[in-house]
Length: 127
Image (cartoon, rainbow, N blue to C red; front, side):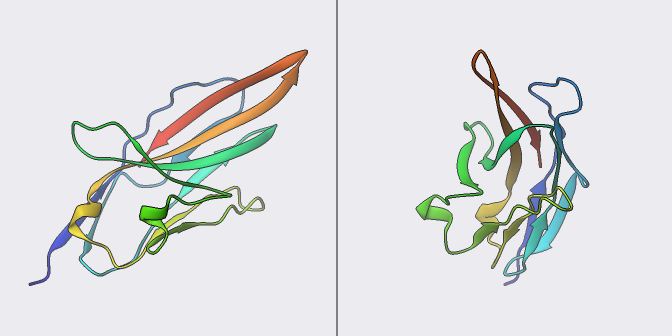
């Protein structure tokens, strides 16, 4: 029996300063079980950056999926993302979609700047 999965999107910015941000292009994406979906994360930053993807189930804390350097072992087989600095995107691909993939997905940006000491800022957009 083919099930429909729902991947939800919300736009949330935890920190905002200047022209640095992350955002999504869609809010909700229904897809069939077994399908492949791509969640687009657009980013703008003027400094060195690290991008992350998180998954949040209802009434749970967000779970780290991956960043541009590493993927959590539980997600390695079906989740992937490649940073594209030309188009300034970090799209998350989910293969062989399962009903258990229905969740809110967050793209997060951590920027690193040096201002006499190290300062970190974290921004997130929910998908």
